[in-house]
Structures are given as C-alpha cells and as structure tokens.
Length: 497
Length: 64
Image 1 (spheres, rainbow over the protein chains, first blue to last red):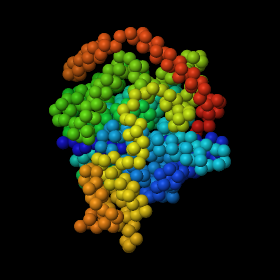
Image 2: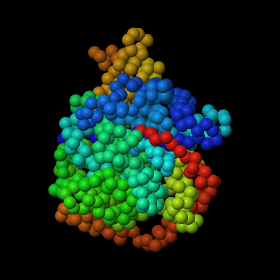
Image 3: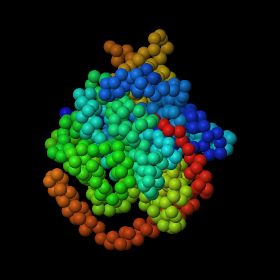
Image 4: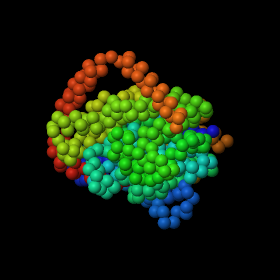
C-alpha cells in the first residue's frame, strides 16, 4: 500500500528594495531578522548536520554533480509552527512544516504568506533610511531569472526511481493547465520565432532536461536530489521543482493533491491500458504553457498524440478508480482525498468547456482575466509595460498593492486557521514535536532541522534527539508526554529511558 | 480510453444538471462585468505609477 503522502512547500519569494540598497541578500536578512527578533522573538538556528543536497536518487556518485553551497552564515531560523524561514541565495525562503494532507499544506503555505507580510511590516518599522522592502510570491523577474517554489512528498523507498520518473513526468508536464500561475510574454530562447502574449506557467520555459540533479541551471522536470531528511532505508523525499508558486488556494490544493495521488498510484504500481509516456517531455512542457485551448496534440512515445487535457483526464480516471478500489488513506484525510478528486474533475471539465469560468479557482485564469480587461479598457498591446506591471503586481504581498488580494478568489481555509498556523505546528507529523519543543523551551533548543533537535541542558554534551520518521512525534504520539514534562531535561530522560 | 470517454460523458451530464439549476446567466454576467469594472478602477489607482521603470527595476538573482 502507498504510504501517507506527507507533503510541504518551500517558496523562494522575490524581493525588491524601493529607494535603498538593492542588495537582495542584505534585504532578505533584514526582512527575516525583523520577523525573528520583533515578531516571533525566535532565535533557534538551523542545523546543517544532515544536509546532503548533492546526493542523486539515481545512485550516482556526488563527484562532478555540483552540490549547492551551504551558506551557513546567512539567517536561518526555525519557527514554532515547525517551519524553516531563511535566506536562500538571494531570496527569503519559507518552507512549510511537514503536513499530513493537501488542505493542511494550503493552510501552511498561506501562513507563509502572512509571515512574509508581517516581516515586511516589521522591516518597515526597523528600517529608517526611507527604503522599503517589497516581497513578491512569483517565480521569475521577466528577464530570464527564475526562482523556485518546490514541493516535497514522502515516498516509499521501495518504489524504483525509474518508475517514479516515468509515472510522474506526464503529470508534471500537463498539470500546469490548472497549477500554472500565468505570465505575460516569454523570457527565454525556447519560444524564439513565436510571438508569445501569455503563458499558463511562470516556470515551464525554464525547464531543459527530463531528469537531473540541478535546480539552478539545466533545470530538470524530475529532480533527482536524494536527501530524504528521514530514515533513508524506508523513505524517499521527492523534491519537485517544476511548479509555480500559487496564490489561489484551489490551485495550490490541486497542485499538491493531484500530485500526491499520482505518486501514491506510482507506489502501488497502478497504470492504465494506455501509456502516457511523452515523446519529448521538455518540448511538450514548453508547448503546453502556450496553449490556452488545450487542443494542441502532444507527440507520445508510442507514435500517437494526446492533448494536455486528455492526459489529465486519463490520470484523473485512474485516480478515481484507484480511490474506489483501495481507499484514500494515503491522502492523510480521506475527505480531503475525495475533495481533491471532486475539484480535479470539476476543473478539467471547466477547462474543457469554459476556461475563463475558473477565474475564482486558478491563478493563470484570474490573472489573464485581469490582463484582458485592463488591456481592453486602456487599448494596450501585449508588449505594453503596464501589462507586465499588472502581472508583477498580481504577486505583490503588500495588502495595499496586491492585485491578487483584490480578486474574489475562492478560499478553502479560514483566515483564523491561517493565523493559528503562523505559530502552531501541524498535529499529524513530527513538525508537532519540533514546534512544541521550540514553543516550550526556546532557550534549550539550540538548533533544529527536519530530522532532529539539539538541546543544550547546561550540561555537556549537547543532546541530539533524532526524528527519522516524519509520521512520529505527532500530537497523538507525544502530546501527553510533553505535557507531563516540566523541563527539557525531564523530556530527554523520559525519551531515552 | 473507452472508460475515459464514458467518464467524461457522465461528467458533462452532471455539469449540465448543475447549470440548469442556475438561471439568469446573463444577469450573472452583467454583475461580473460590473465587479470587474470596479476592480479595474481600483487597479488604476494602486498600479505603480511608472510602469516601465517599475518593471525594469524588478531584477532578481536566480535562486533554488
């Protein structure tokens, strides 16, 4: 049986300094420090002990694979909701805690937006030189520079990586028809010779390989980073770099929910009678982004053709049958799994009949509706700067400027639950233990990372508590124990006895 | 493939049922248009003044 699809999203936000030093690393540090010092009052640092981003899921040696540099001098904090908030390269990055289901993932992704918004407000108060830090939840600057919104899914180590690649590639190429965040124009050479007014995805044109380890150049559709942050003999973490950052909650929900289902089917080795293998996934990915009619035939490996919509219908049908046959335990919460299926079907139907009817559900449709109306009102050509400005400002996180916030998109989680998720960890994963320990004993937890906490009890040596199973350390497992312990030393004594 | 066709047909029928329950689509359309007009008014107000400079100055380093 497929294992529970514990999931999370790491978002690199765009950052711009108005009227000040444009250095994005310094700006990101100011932003996160302002939040950590003034809002969260949280000082626990990140522990790089187990980081190995250069390990390759295909089993390659790390030589020549260019593992990213770990920049330990940059701001790196762990929050009481179990999230990581840090400077990654030249961006502020928020990684949600491990979530049990797609809806919880939406809630923590939204909590991340709120944390970034509060960080901007805190930075405004902390900075007195007339400059302002502005954060955008998007994935490119329109000039050929892209930054990621990565998803992570817990997988069974027993599923062969080659099967994962084959099974998930058709989904990654075609899910952009509902998960894309939309973009005016093009910014790489892949569409040379074609006039591009609008694309479904911010990221699609940046992908150049089907499979690979890199994330910053020659980006692959399936990323092979093999860094499970868990027991490597039992688990794999599929690191997904192919997606856009979504603002529309339904789009985030579907992105994570449908991918969880497709991965569960791969673990259980479910496939339909028709092969969904694409002849050229990279070109297909670029082409799907340009096709707003979903009628473009994509060449398949077996010589036939299929549209992106047909591939999605096929995956949906398989998932529907899979759920009927085997249940939806893998989705964390069965009701959430059913909601994913219901909305997946509704969105595919909407795309087939009247895509613009989905402007309350999907980012690219909401943005396109706005752009088209704005273009019509002012009589603008597609290459007018004002359209690029509307595109950019759609993603602005300042409530006073955000265009997305002015659209009446459908909400799946309440504002109240998002506010709670800013400080409270999810109850159903090890994030609960991490968050609760940070909340109760902030001074004693010296560092934390995904799979361990390090305590300083004032006596040598420091004590590391490993958390190698993302499904342990939940409220159900340890709430009683934590409540019974008056101090961290008592907790560690009881854990080791 | 046959299964998919069947499924799609069911979906369409079901969606048609739902549509029948929602009358006065043209009124809904007008309401939507009015809302969109209000939204555009607001966007004209909050959109960064110098769009060209705003867009040009937004330069990011690649990440990930």
